[in-house]
Image 1 (cartoon, helix red, strand yellow):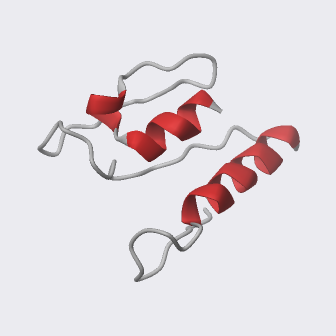
Image 2 (tube, helix red, strand yellow; image 1 turned 90 degrees about the horizontal axis):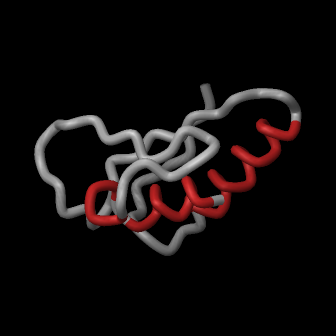
Length: 74
């Protein structure tokens, strides 16, 4: 498991690092999964939202949040 995070919210470069790591792992033959709480998503509660399956995007931006949506599209 690799965890990318810190005590700073926003603007510290976490999302680009996650994107790069996921790409490197995928290219090395792994199937990475990215977990996020979905910043700015409209859906509330503890429901799990699967944003993408590696082939297609399964949830819209309102359900997932902007950064998980961006990562799923990549």
